[in-house]
Image (cartoon, rainbow, N blue to C red; front, side):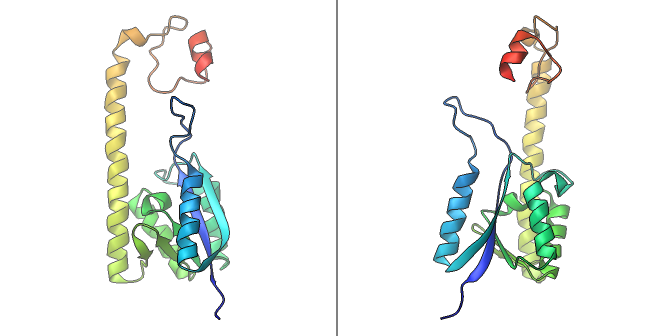
Length: 188
Protein backbone atom coordinates (compact mmCIF):
# COMPACT_ATOMS: atom_id res chain seq x y z
CA UNK A 1 0.00 0.00 0.00
CA UNK A 2 1.36 3.40 -1.02
CA UNK A 3 1.56 6.13 1.62
CA UNK A 4 -1.13 8.78 1.39
CA UNK A 5 -0.28 12.05 -0.31
CA UNK A 6 0.18 14.75 2.34
CA UNK A 7 -1.70 17.95 1.60
CA UNK A 8 -2.35 21.36 3.11
CA UNK A 9 -5.66 23.18 3.27
CA UNK A 10 -5.96 26.92 2.77
CA UNK A 11 -9.25 28.47 3.91
CA UNK A 12 -10.14 32.15 3.86
CA UNK A 13 -13.16 34.34 4.47
CA UNK A 14 -13.07 38.06 3.85
CA UNK A 15 -15.04 39.40 6.78
CA UNK A 16 -16.37 38.62 10.21
CA UNK A 17 -19.81 40.19 9.84
CA UNK A 18 -22.67 38.69 11.84
CA UNK A 19 -26.24 38.00 10.80
CA UNK A 20 -29.16 39.47 12.74
CA UNK A 21 -29.22 36.22 14.73
CA UNK A 22 -25.57 36.69 15.72
CA UNK A 23 -24.24 33.94 13.43
CA UNK A 24 -21.24 34.45 11.15
CA UNK A 25 -22.23 35.31 7.57
CA UNK A 26 -19.16 33.45 6.33
CA UNK A 27 -17.88 30.43 8.21
CA UNK A 28 -14.27 29.44 7.71
CA UNK A 29 -14.81 26.08 9.44
CA UNK A 30 -17.37 25.13 6.76
CA UNK A 31 -14.58 25.47 4.18
CA UNK A 32 -12.15 23.44 6.29
CA UNK A 33 -14.66 20.60 6.78
CA UNK A 34 -15.52 20.58 3.06
CA UNK A 35 -11.83 20.36 2.13
CA UNK A 36 -11.14 17.65 4.72
CA UNK A 37 -13.94 15.58 3.13
CA UNK A 38 -12.49 16.29 -0.32
CA UNK A 39 -9.07 15.08 0.84
CA UNK A 40 -10.55 11.99 2.45
CA UNK A 41 -12.38 11.02 -0.77
CA UNK A 42 -9.09 11.46 -2.69
CA UNK A 43 -7.33 9.35 0.00
CA UNK A 44 -5.02 12.23 0.88
CA UNK A 45 -3.78 13.03 4.37
CA UNK A 46 -4.29 16.60 5.60
CA UNK A 47 -1.00 17.61 7.18
CA UNK A 48 -1.46 21.37 7.60
CA UNK A 49 -4.39 23.78 7.74
CA UNK A 50 -3.92 27.49 7.05
CA UNK A 51 -6.78 29.84 8.01
CA UNK A 52 -7.14 33.52 7.17
CA UNK A 53 -10.31 34.62 8.93
CA UNK A 54 -11.62 38.06 8.07
CA UNK A 55 -8.90 38.70 5.46
CA UNK A 56 -9.43 40.06 1.96
CA UNK A 57 -7.86 38.36 -1.07
CA UNK A 58 -8.30 41.53 -3.13
CA UNK A 59 -5.41 43.45 -1.59
CA UNK A 60 -2.28 43.84 -3.70
CA UNK A 61 -0.01 42.68 -0.91
CA UNK A 62 -0.71 39.24 0.50
CA UNK A 63 1.30 40.12 3.63
CA UNK A 64 -2.03 41.23 5.11
CA UNK A 65 -2.98 37.53 5.16
CA UNK A 66 -0.70 35.92 7.78
CA UNK A 67 -1.70 32.31 7.06
CA UNK A 68 -1.24 32.78 3.30
CA UNK A 69 2.17 34.36 3.93
CA UNK A 70 3.15 31.44 6.18
CA UNK A 71 1.91 28.92 3.61
CA UNK A 72 3.88 30.58 0.80
CA UNK A 73 7.02 30.51 2.99
CA UNK A 74 6.51 26.80 3.63
CA UNK A 75 5.85 26.16 -0.07
CA UNK A 76 9.09 27.97 -0.94
CA UNK A 77 10.84 25.89 1.71
CA UNK A 78 9.53 22.76 -0.07
CA UNK A 79 7.49 21.66 2.98
CA UNK A 80 4.14 21.76 1.15
CA UNK A 81 3.59 19.85 -2.10
CA UNK A 82 -0.18 20.26 -2.56
CA UNK A 83 -2.65 22.87 -1.34
CA UNK A 84 -6.42 22.44 -1.38
CA UNK A 85 -8.71 25.47 -1.68
CA UNK A 86 -12.48 25.58 -1.93
CA UNK A 87 -12.31 27.67 -5.10
CA UNK A 88 -9.85 30.05 -6.72
CA UNK A 89 -11.42 33.11 -5.04
CA UNK A 90 -10.05 31.77 -1.76
CA UNK A 91 -6.49 31.86 -3.19
CA UNK A 92 -6.61 35.36 -4.68
CA UNK A 93 -9.07 37.85 -6.17
CA UNK A 94 -6.54 39.65 -8.33
CA UNK A 95 -5.40 38.26 -11.65
CA UNK A 96 -1.74 39.34 -11.63
CA UNK A 97 -0.98 38.48 -8.01
CA UNK A 98 -2.93 35.24 -8.23
CA UNK A 99 -0.99 34.05 -11.28
CA UNK A 100 2.31 35.15 -9.75
CA UNK A 101 1.74 33.21 -6.52
CA UNK A 102 0.44 30.16 -8.41
CA UNK A 103 3.60 30.28 -10.56
CA UNK A 104 5.79 30.60 -7.44
CA UNK A 105 4.06 27.56 -5.93
CA UNK A 106 4.47 25.56 -9.16
CA UNK A 107 8.17 26.45 -9.39
CA UNK A 108 8.61 24.97 -5.91
CA UNK A 109 6.87 21.74 -6.92
CA UNK A 110 3.57 22.57 -5.22
CA UNK A 111 0.25 21.83 -6.90
CA UNK A 112 -2.85 23.87 -6.07
CA UNK A 113 -6.11 21.97 -6.26
CA UNK A 114 -9.48 23.70 -6.11
CA UNK A 115 -12.47 21.67 -4.97
CA UNK A 116 -14.52 23.58 -7.54
CA UNK A 117 -12.16 24.07 -10.49
CA UNK A 118 -9.88 21.05 -10.10
CA UNK A 119 -6.11 20.99 -10.36
CA UNK A 120 -4.53 24.33 -11.25
CA UNK A 121 -1.30 23.91 -13.19
CA UNK A 122 -0.10 27.29 -14.45
CA UNK A 123 2.92 25.66 -16.08
CA UNK A 124 0.73 24.22 -18.85
CA UNK A 125 -1.02 26.35 -21.48
CA UNK A 126 -4.45 24.98 -20.57
CA UNK A 127 -3.85 25.32 -16.82
CA UNK A 128 -2.61 28.90 -17.23
CA UNK A 129 -5.74 29.76 -19.23
CA UNK A 130 -8.03 28.09 -16.68
CA UNK A 131 -6.36 29.84 -13.74
CA UNK A 132 -6.38 33.17 -15.61
CA UNK A 133 -10.10 32.93 -16.31
CA UNK A 134 -10.94 31.98 -12.70
CA UNK A 135 -8.85 34.83 -11.31
CA UNK A 136 -10.10 37.31 -13.92
CA UNK A 137 -13.72 36.61 -12.95
CA UNK A 138 -12.83 36.77 -9.26
CA UNK A 139 -11.26 40.21 -9.72
CA UNK A 140 -14.16 41.39 -11.89
CA UNK A 141 -16.69 40.28 -9.23
CA UNK A 142 -14.74 42.11 -6.51
CA UNK A 143 -14.49 45.30 -8.57
CA UNK A 144 -18.18 45.11 -9.49
CA UNK A 145 -19.17 44.69 -5.83
CA UNK A 146 -16.92 47.60 -4.82
CA UNK A 147 -18.62 49.83 -7.42
CA UNK A 148 -22.04 48.94 -6.02
CA UNK A 149 -20.95 49.62 -2.44
CA UNK A 150 -19.32 52.91 -3.43
CA UNK A 151 -22.50 53.99 -5.25
CA UNK A 152 -24.65 53.15 -2.21
CA UNK A 153 -22.29 55.00 0.12
CA UNK A 154 -22.37 58.11 -2.09
CA UNK A 155 -26.16 58.05 -2.09
CA UNK A 156 -26.19 57.63 1.69
CA UNK A 157 -23.67 60.44 2.19
CA UNK A 158 -26.24 62.88 0.79
CA UNK A 159 -29.00 61.58 3.10
CA UNK A 160 -28.97 63.94 6.08
CA UNK A 161 -31.29 61.58 8.02
CA UNK A 162 -28.15 59.56 8.83
CA UNK A 163 -26.41 62.57 10.39
CA UNK A 164 -25.05 61.77 13.85
CA UNK A 165 -26.72 64.08 16.39
CA UNK A 166 -23.62 64.07 18.57
CA UNK A 167 -20.85 64.77 16.11
CA UNK A 168 -22.73 66.01 13.04
CA UNK A 169 -21.10 63.46 10.71
CA UNK A 170 -23.10 61.47 8.18
CA UNK A 171 -21.81 57.97 8.86
CA UNK A 172 -21.42 55.87 5.74
CA UNK A 173 -20.82 52.14 6.13
CA UNK A 174 -18.92 51.22 9.27
CA UNK A 175 -18.59 53.93 11.90
CA UNK A 176 -15.14 55.47 12.27
CA UNK A 177 -13.17 54.50 15.35
CA UNK A 178 -12.61 58.17 16.18
CA UNK A 179 -16.30 58.98 16.70
CA UNK A 180 -17.22 58.96 20.38
CA UNK A 181 -20.93 59.68 20.19
CA UNK A 182 -23.29 57.28 21.97
CA UNK A 183 -24.77 55.90 18.74
CA UNK A 184 -21.30 55.17 17.39
CA UNK A 185 -20.02 53.69 20.64
CA UNK A 186 -22.84 51.13 20.68
CA UNK A 187 -21.83 49.90 17.21
CA UNK A 188 -18.19 49.31 18.19
